[in-house]
Amino acid sequence: MKIFLKYSAAIILMIGGSHKAIAADPLVLSREQCVEIALRDNPTVRIADMEVKKYDYSKKEVLASLFPSIDFSAAYQRSIELQTIRMNMGGESQNLKMGSDNTWNMGFTASMPLIAPSLWKSISISDEQIVASLESARASKLDLVNNINKAYYSLLLAIDSKDVVKQNYDIAVLNADVYAKRLATGTASEYDVLRSSVQVKNIEPELLQADIAVRQCQLQLKVLMGISTDVEIRPNVTLSDMQRNIYSYPASADRSISDNSSLRSLDIQKRILSKNVDLKKMAWIPTLGASFNLSWLSLSNGSPFKNQMFNPYSTVGLQLSVPIFSGGSKYYGLKQAQVQLKEIDLQRQNLVESLNMQVELAIDNINKEARQIESSAEGMRQAEKAHDIMQKSFDIGAATYLDLRDSELANTTAKLSYLQAIYNYLVSMSELDLLLGKGVK
Image 1 (spheres, one colour):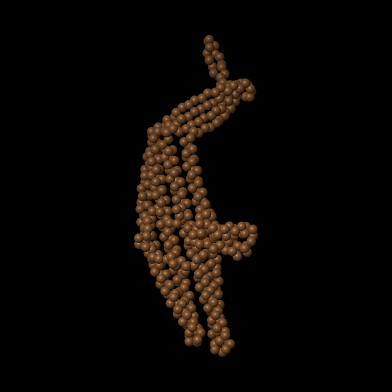
Image 2 (cartoon, rainbow, N blue to C red):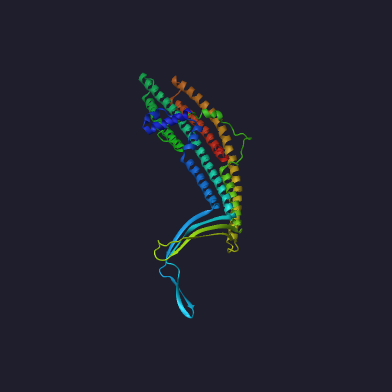
């Protein structure tokens, strides 16, 4: 709770323009808190949620077709020349004009499907489309969680690597000071002083690059979380702290791919195609609809706005539509849907085999990286011990500066290899969780 209070305070201060206050009080976040903020504020997640709403509205649109459709219409017609008919009456031919100058017609029409199998099946397909959109939103969240994890681990690696480079830089500065003092007492040559000073200058670009890497990782994490780039964030752990939770992947652990988002999406798509086959079959079933009409008709001569007398009339009816022949379009449409259903069965089989292979490879990498961490940790301890021995030997003049620099380089390389091994393990675990569909309900 305190973390989110700090987050809210930081945002308010940022809006008010108090940048210094934000910089003085950075957000210290765990990986889980970063994921929680991202799932709430990242635009990608909000877009996925809007897609779910869109398909929900689409289903309601189809459901609306089951209800009566009511329309109102009005029409006016003015006769320019009335129709004339010739009649023979009493041996004499007479011309009669038929119709009226003005014709008004207005009324309501209503229609409603009573038996509409295709419409009913379309509603069922709409339900599956909503499920598909929910799974798509879940897939977006899984990808986001994986990206947040990797960005968080990258930030940890950048910070810890910067600390290692900074330690190497401090040692180089210390050694340069030692040589400067020895030069003053005549126990060191000017060449030794210059060489140690050059070594300090050589490390400065590495330190600058490490600082840039930290800033880039922070920016990437903030963008994924959907928060302002002006807000400073810091992790609450280091890579070394996370080693306590690192172990080989148990052989008895769950390796099921049933929650894999791609597989679940394919299963949903298969259900949609199966119902689409049923929908194609429904095209041969007759449909029945009801209709109702209530109208008013007025006929008059002269002015269209005088002497109007509207006479109501109404009708009710049923309409039966029986498909008989359509040139084979329904038949070939059904065959096409059945082929698509068979295709997706083969796609699923191929996907299952591919996912199982990826899971096995990921677990092998995790186990290999866990062993690599143990090996790197032992190598780091030995490098630190060798450097301490060489530093003491250098202090008493029993070792050369070149020997000391070799031990420092070996120590720095061992520490960076150790950090990289932890990072690789954590990223591999995150990728495995993505494959298994873990991390998002």
